[in-house]
Image (cartoon, rainbow, N blue to C red; front, side):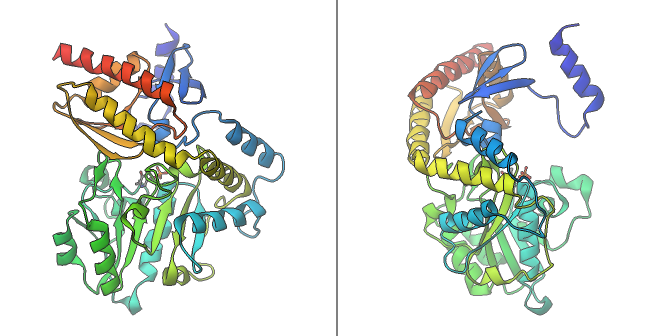
Length: 399
Ligand SMILES: *Cc1c(COP(=O)(O)O)cnc(C)c1O
């Protein structure tokens, strides 16, 4: 039996059947490249789903993990540490959360949205606010609360009953106008719906959402888990819209691959939580927060916001210039990119790209999603164009 089949068999026998068979068994990485344990090299244009901001094995990441692990890794929420304080100050500053800004840390995106869901429940005006709004096709995570916010029926159905009061509305200004009233505690939005296939909000949506939530006393909570940490060319995607939310949730790219998530509140929303109402044993530990500080500092130092904007534009231009009949258009901002397909062949393109040494993702049948590390350079874009073009041609030829 070959090694390849061996890992697949082991996976099939012992790993919980909550996800499908992995595409490869990876062994190590460097920059925007990863290698499987058969020695095949891949250009990684998914980066662990928008997580490995600095790519793989970046010296800043390695140094931060090693240094902090050798000093103090975990203390529980009975204590704090310099890295935790510094990260709270840093994310409040980067989000522009102002003098009232506050941060809470957990360990994942779903946990960040749980904290935000509980924040929404605290905005209850003495029990009068029973409704929470989120968007059709939204993805906010897989825990019970974050799943209740998620607008994908096929993910929710098997797990009902979920926490109540959540309604999913279409991403239109008309739906906002029709649904916002004084019984709404919060509206949750992703500034770009990543899991739905890199779907952008209509023009003016965030501005209308801001105005209507303010008018009705509801919180505007922006899920920046996939779009944050510089991925769209600004620190957070809501900043492109020139609005101020009441809270944002963060995770994925903020520590470059170390597990962490968080909630950042603005203004009056910062006083909703009171002592004893939320916590996490691992949350805000010195190790995770030290790594996040180092990664965010490196993004700033190396000008990776500008690089995200520049490389994102280059990639989209290159894809459009290929003139493939399979490509119907490109979407997204910075280095969160969706490629619309004229045929439902995303799975075949992903498989063909893997065979040719390129990792991209099928967000759905007719969308390729890419979220490469923010560090990619000219040579990476060049290699991507070559390998992606070959994959498109192979799939087109077989149609
Ligand atoms: C990935 C993601 C989540 C969930 O994060 P996990 O760390 O997987 O729990 C929530 N919201 C958005 C927008 C995401 O992309």
